[in-house]
Amino acid sequence: MKTQPVLTLTLTLTFAGGYAIQTGLIGSAFGQDAPQKPTATEADAASKPDDAKADDPKPEGSSKAPLRRNEQSGANALRTLQQAHDKLNGYRFIDAKLDQSIRVGDRQFRMAGRYLKGADLKLRLEYDVQVGGTSGKLIEVCDGQLLWTHTDVGGQQRVTRRNVQQIISAASQAGFSSQNVLTAELGLGGLQGLLASLQKSIQFDAQWEQDASYRAFVVIEGAWKRSFRERFLGANAPADRPLPPAVPDQVRLYFEQDSLFPRRVVYLKKEGDDRRLPMVTIDFTEVTWPESLDDALFTFKPPATVAPEDITKAYVNQFQPEPAKPTEGTTPASSGE
Image (cartoon, rainbow, N blue to C red):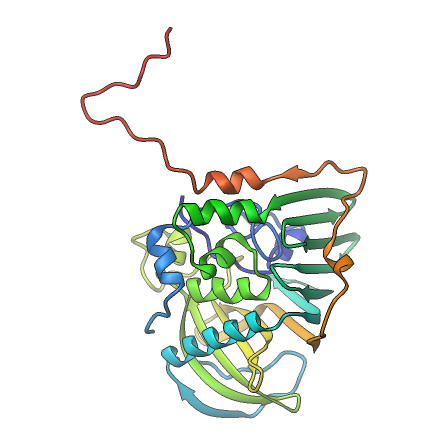
């Protein structure tokens, strides 16, 4: 089974708006409820930057920000992405507000929540949304051992859990030891998982500098790699064939120049020959790096009215050897009938 790139946080395209977008996108906010098995080739590629240009960025909700182009190559963009990933790993605790805006066709809505990162895979993400007469809520909590995901959309609830340590152990025994692969494919790393996934799935080809909101940003941008496009368009699709309406075409990331913290992630959709409009915009605001966070923030107790689904085995099974295929000239073993 091929891996699928993680459009981190775009669960909301289906979760919040009730859109039944059958595009193979993620099933939980920082990962996926449908496990995908990395291949050895992808495992190597995820841990090594590729050698791999940009539009006039205008942060939504503000006047046009001045650019200090200093435009650089995709190779520099990948180095920036890797450095940002390494810095995130170095932060023991992160506490930030999360604001997200979604635009799908004529429908637009906003969400707000909170993101917390602790040590040793601990994380907490929660946000609320109101779309018309439907309200929704998502909570995702990992204590380093169990990762819980609780969604409540219009009163319909679902709770899943997975034992991340069992999954990591199975992945390691199968030879998938790259941390980037695990965070990208299994959704075990919060923001780190986002950056690892984008490194794996996006061909970054531009980097420039930009001032906005009294801050200096390093901006990188790219489009999906061919392997991603082929999953929607087929292996022989021409390079200029557009992706489906529900799938973004490009991704742009804004890193604070000094800390390289990812303040904004924008998924862009092409409209016409020279227009690209934000489809999903994720902003991290009021970011702090506290010395500690209460462990209670990383614990979760499912509601008594919802039976949790344990999806650990589905992940572990992805790393089990596939049964040997019968060689030519032989027949499968008789069932005894």
